[in-house]
Length: 293
Image (cartoon, rainbow, N blue to C red):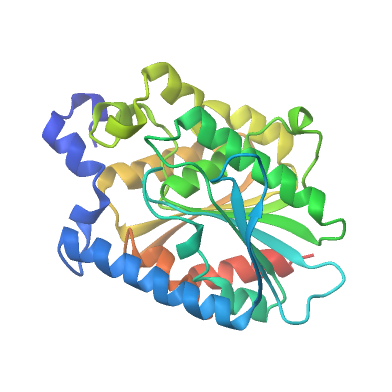
């Protein structure tokens, strides 16, 4: 496949418009269906867990978390932190509880993170918020069997930025034992040249500073014990697949424990929605990751 730099504007725009690639429905319908699924799933998540909503992790209005506790948590539970997608400008933690039922059933605490969406928030702010959210969460729980990260699309980008954090700056050393990064973006440079950047207003410099591909060496320093799974949908665009493959290859070349999973018969949206199903391949990967000793 040719480099994104060789694409014309129209082709680049299409490659970074995930809704154009669904095999199930047209681009407007798939986004509408996605929001409906996340809403319904989160309602169910809130009905089966003990919930603390809108817990502040910072001073700004958007710096809030939703915490989903299992009915009978163990003395040292696993904790999963989820970063939502929406191209850093849509969706919210209020639609992020859909994967809760199978996880709390297995005794896992689930935390959904809010961050300031563009245009109000810029990329530097958003990245600093998710890092601070993780620092805050690990300070609240003294006994955990491990911290796990999950993110979808823009949220997978944010999860990957969490993995390359210098935690000394935050005064914590979170025991991040695993990460599931779903249909993510790991090099933001192509985004600068699409309409996705209109509300973000990133320069090339901003994009490089917030591209996980640039910081694999830091992941290596931090992540000796971390199991990373990079996942992509069969019906993601070629560019999304390429981004995932290249990030996977770079992290693997650094000698880290990483695997790659292309999920058959899914698109950019239902690949994450299906986490509400206990027997779904990615749910099972998460559960196995969190129960391995």
